[in-house]
Amino acid sequence: MARSAKLLLPALLLALSSCDRGEQQEAPSPDPESAPVTEPALNFPDSDGRIHTPFAADDRKATVLIFLMNDCPVANASAPALARVCADFESRGVVFYGIYTTETAEEITAHRRDYGLPFPGLLDPDLELAELSGATRVPEAAVFAPSGALLYRGRIDDRAVSLGVV
Image (cartoon, rainbow, N blue to C red; front, side, top):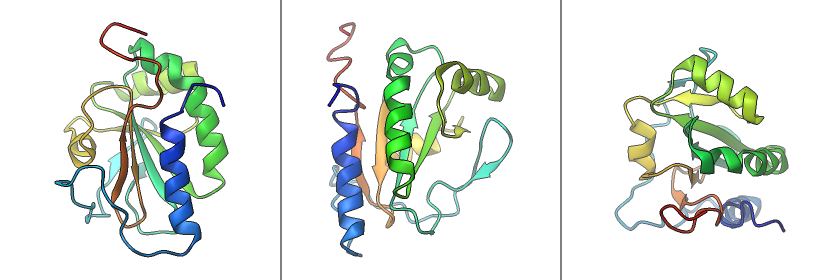
């Protein structure tokens, strides 16, 4: 396996394995203080103006929030791996969203186009999704079970090992 997405892939496989066994129990959260998302009606516009409900109660196996910025070199370098992971897991019922907090709709559209990101880019200027998931940096991923339990939050891969080191 390529080094890209080494950390995100196990979280996705965990989410799928618990769903494939038909388990309805809540998966443990990586942070003992975080509670499952219980408000599935949180709605966010994407860069095309469509409204998305990331925690909708439907047949999805997992929801992945990927926190991005259009001018982050590490996030931009991760874009091909993110597109591959999305292609591999979307058909298995995993729903992906790019989360942007400071960009305009036009900047998000251009970023998704320029870097080949296949998932919707949601506008979250109030940091609601970052607060729900505990995300603190870019790029960072959060994987949620259908129950709303946070299964994983952290780096997408081992591309940036410390501040200023890529």
